Image (cartoon, rainbow, N blue to C red; front, side, top):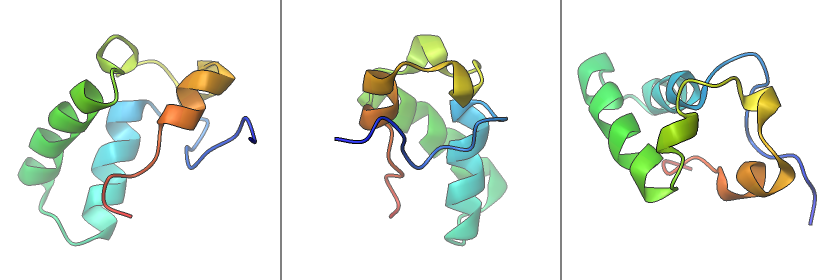
Amino acid sequence: MAQGGGTTDGVSAREELVHQARLFGIGKADAQRHAVTALAAFDLGEYADRLCRTYSGGQRRRWTSPWA
């Protein structure tokens, strides 16, 4: 399995989730609420504000847009 994923290296998981939700037409406030839920579901809460490029391969594999 590839180590990369659907993340953008220069943003945090929280920012990436909000951005992807917005691309799917979800309003900003709802996107922010959904990001909190998704971070918990993927067990990434402690990494929420770390840049995606700092994640291990395993953390990247767990990360996929819940809206895709």
